[in-house]
Image 1: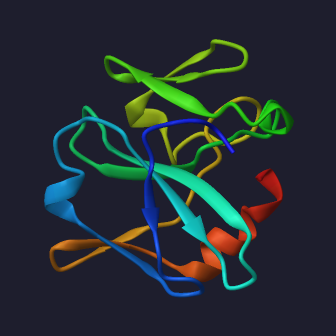
Image 2: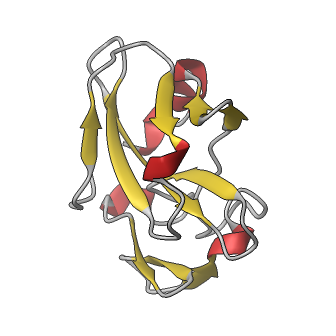
Length: 126
């Protein structure tokens, strides 16, 4: 898994609920989540320049085998393997190649909710 200052979410097999106040400052927040079978999945959440809270796996279709993930530089997410830059407002909009692999999410009240089943779908990246 990528080495980041990731927060560990201890709710195996349960949907993830992240307070909006935790992810509303434009700085990418990284999380490690444990699936019900103890497999780890890494993802990030960022409020993009257009004000939308976005989520993606900390991996892409091209570089995932290197397990290096992304970092944030200004308003861009940058692949730690190949160095490509991706504007934050394209996260969840563009998929494939070295773009951060999209992760479904929705806002419910004052929380961002990510389903455990959606996290499971990206487990192969890790």
